[in-house]
Amino acid sequence: MGAGLCPGPLSYLDETDEFVNLLANSFRVTDEAGNDLPDKTQRRVKSLLINANAVAYDTVTEAWYKPSPAGALDADGDPLALILATANGRTFRRPTAWEPGASGAYLFKALPFGGTSLRDIIIDACRVMAICDEASRQNLEACKTPYIVTVSNPDLLLSVKQAIAQKQRGEPVLVTTAELGDGLKAIDIATEFLADRFEEFRDHKRAELLTKLGVLTANTEKRERVQSAEVNAKLGEASDYIYLLIDNFNRQATSYGLPFRAVYNGSMEEIYEDGDETPVNDQEDDQKGGSQE
Image (cartoon, rainbow, N blue to C red; front, side, top):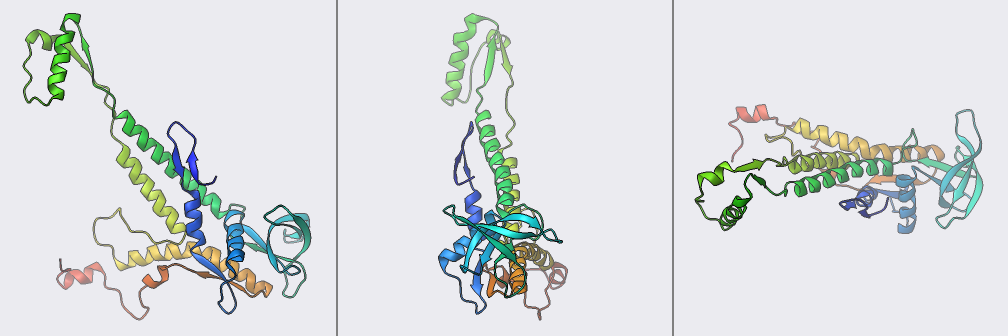
């Protein structure tokens, strides 16, 4: 689903493309010398890796295509041939190449196992966040439910309206009669305010998704200081996710003997502590008198 307003009682913005673009910016595709491939080629390769979970490089045309398996499989369950498709719908068939120097199409998978694409993962998270947005807005609307009062005697209705008008004007004291008080019955239809909980869960899902895209997020669930070991654990988790794509691409390129590499393009690695430094945890810091406010 592309970016835009999703249909429903309360329309909400589909954020899928936003996170797809963020993931695409997290890595670059280069030659062996570290030079970026042309922008048009990079966009094609990244788009297929993220959206289709696979891309193929054809040694005859020296270009990248969307691959589909064609015909029989080999003993390892991989296709013996591929149907290569261009973005404008043209297709042709090539034998699948696995060894360096072969003539044919080399198959690159974004994720090593399964058919789930990175875009599928993003769509799933965005759907949950959209549900939270919709529930939050619905809860806000529900909280605007008017106050309902029943009057046992219709003759008291005018007096009730006058008392309500006094309240809306902000008068600090309402003077009424005992008869009016006895003839009123309030109906409690108040809706519990839950929007903040929906927002909190949405933020949690967003941080979880960003981690999967190799983007480090702040730990907003903890009020106390976070130890360096916890920071490095979060860094390691984010690093493992993005390098699942990068390492898998590079492993295949090396195996095929092709001069292409995927390179991390974010700032996460700059946050890692120097390997020669010993991190100071909270306990050691407290022994030295604690941090200075």
